Image 1: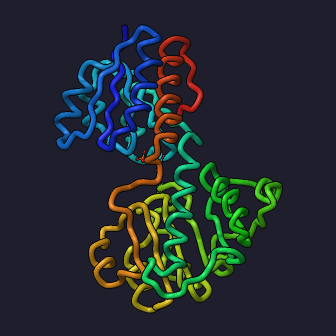
Image 2: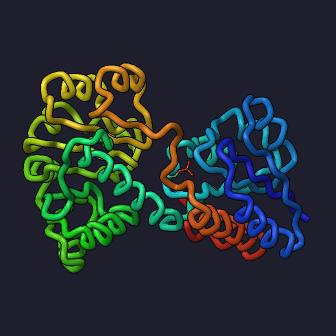
Amino acid sequence: MAKVLVATDKPFAAVAVKGIREVVEGAGDELVLLEKYTEKQQLLDAVKDVEAMIVRSDIIDAEVFDAAKKLKIVVRAGAGYDNIDLAAATAHKVCVMNTPGQNSNAVAELVFGMLVYAVRNFYNGASGTELKGKKLGILAYGNVGRNVGRIAKGFGMDICAYDAHCHAQVIENDGIRAVASTADLFKECQIVSLHIPATAETKNSINFELMNSMPKGAIIVNTARKEVIDEAGLAKMFEERPDFKYMTDIKPAIDAELAAKYPERYFGTPKKMGAQTAEANINAGIAAARQIEDFLCTGNQKFRVN
Ligand code: 3PG
């Protein structure tokens, strides 16, 4: 019998935990829960005797791998795995997986929750504008980007996308115009929705020059990662472009300053909420549990990222 730990600083919906438990116990294994922990030591204690773990944005670094002597697999219930030290995992012979696509609709829906709020002037009573007919640029056409494109069609938006790792034809096949570069996307689109992962290449890549090339009434919506934004450039953009709005699900370090100075142009969700729906929790959580049981039982390494 293997011990499977669910370690979530931001817990799944109870219904998702129930589903995870059914998968784990159904396979004859034991489920251990560590939710809403506040100290790293709690995590270090919890990982001591587990063979597998499911996490979300929880930081799984070398210290955690050192403490987890029996660990064989970590599944990030979600898409981005920049919170896991892959080199340390590999050094400890631990398999790391994600669950791509399982929470992407939830994130895409939040994009539009924030966009409507932005174009209606943060519901301040003044006439706003509509999303219909506005030019939307989707930066990175992965699972979330595709869902954003699908929903944007319902709003009647004029949609284009760019993805350095996806062939233009794939984008065009969905009835979305593929542009040639990130620079073109920003130059053309009044609204840009970010869906790039945080990597060495993308960190700070959304800089002042790119942002400032956007047409009048520019709005950037960030449900990707805070690291992709150059924060000095963001601050400068707010100062120099009174027409600019920034809506984000991951607060920058300068969140308090922006919120105080620009209460009707800057919005950050109180906590990262993109994937925080029962459906996304069920999909990603249960997929993670199934991937673990399959790995432990058959050695299946599909979705391995290290
Ligand atoms: C992801 O990478 O899957 C999303 O950013 C959601 O992250 P979360 O599980 O921490 O909400």
